[in-house]
Each structure stands twice: as C-alpha cells, then as structure tokens.
Picture 1 (cartoon, helix red, strand yellow):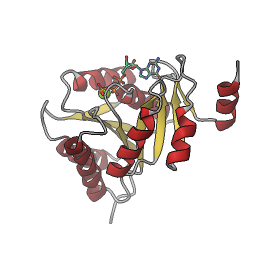
Picture 2 (cartoon, protein in one colour):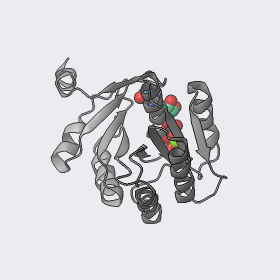
Picture 3 (cartoon, rainbow, N blue to C red):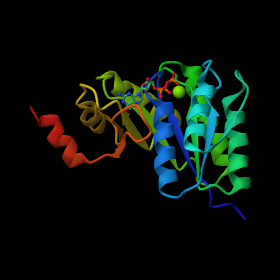
Length: 208
Ligand SMILES: Nc1nc2c(ncn2[C@@H]2O[C@H](COP(=O)(O)OP(=O)(O)OP(=O)(O)O)[C@@H](O)[C@H]2O)c(=O)[nH]1
Ligand SMILES: [Mg+2]
C-alpha cells in the first residue's frame, strides 16, 4: 500500500532569495508543533550549501539527508524520500539550489526533482514553495511565472519582509498568476516566520 506519509515540501527560488533560511523556519515551526521533520540538502551546487543546512539541522535537532557536492540533486531527493518513508517522518523539507528563472537547464532540473518525489510518494510534493525576496520588485512576477511553469508552484514564501520592502509584489503576482502567499519571513532566525495575513498585510502596505 502506498504510504500516506510524509508530507513533502519542495522549496525553490532564485539565488539568495532566502530558501535555506526559510527551510529552517518551517522546520522549527513544525518541530515546535510536535511533528517529525527530515531535511533534504538538494542544493549540491553551491559550495557550502550543504554545510549551511547541516548547521541548521544540528541547531534545530532535525535529521538531514545529503549527497556529495556536485551530485544529482534529484538523486538526493530520491534518497531523502526513501529515508523519510523508512523513518516514518511527518514532513520532508527539500532545499534546492538557487537558480535563475531564465536558466532553462536548471529549471528542467527542478521538474526532474519534482517528478522523482512524485514517483516515490503519492501526491508529493504536496507543497511547492517559491521563496521570493520581498525587495525584488517587478522581477518577482517573471520569477513566479517561470517557476510555476517548471514545477507548479503552490504557494509563495515571501522572505525579507522585515526590511524596507512593503511587499507590493504580492499584489502584482496575484494579478498575474493565481499563487497565494502562505508564509512571510521577517528576519534571519528560525523564529522569524509568520503565516500570511492578507488584512494585516494590506494595512501595513498603506500605513504611512
Ligand atoms: N532580514 C531577513 N533576512 C533574511 C530573511 N530570509 C533570509 N534572509 C537572509 O538572506 C540571506 C540569504 O539567505 P539564504 O537562506 O541563504 O538564501 P538561499 O535562497 O538559500 O540562497 P542560495 O542557496 O545561495 O540560493 C541570508 O543572509 C539570510 O540570513 C528574512 O526573512 N529577513
Ligand atoms: Mg540556500
């Protein structure tokens, strides 16, 4: 019989948007909520990326599956899905390498990661979160369009909303595509995450 667990969350976005930090934030809030979490370090591209996620995994006390640097990230996702099933964890969080939405080969790699997860676990990935930097302006619409085409983005994690950005891109993305903002990043620590509240958001946007 197909396993109903784990729930799989795939985290994607351009370089430096805040993906890995956002993975740590989600991991912490799930753990605080009593759920078991496994991290997949599927950024095998950037030097130091695995170590960065490993640091979070140690600090947060959650396990991590990794591959060698330069390994196929889809293979890491495959191994992590196996491990998540074997260990019976509630949620598998997959961190991926930053990629420009204009890099076709790297966008295809995301499609491959998504397909591998879908093959291993029915219905996976249950959530594909696109991390957007709240300060990125109109370019965010182009990013969202390309990522949605490559891997069916189901929600946005709007990072760095603690800065000067007011997040007007949320409205632009709503107009262009039907992708909801689900979580908001408001700082650099794992505690700095909030569910997206449209009413509060609109108030903040129009506040002086
Ligand atoms: N102020 C603030 N900084 C953030 C937030 N989220 C991430 N950052 C910072 O943004 C920088 C990049 O974050 P990462 O999580 O490494 O971004 P990434 O998308 O994983 O980067 P790559 O893996 O290199 O593509 C780090 O300095 C983070 O501390 C946020 O919500 N607020
Ligand atoms: Mg990263």
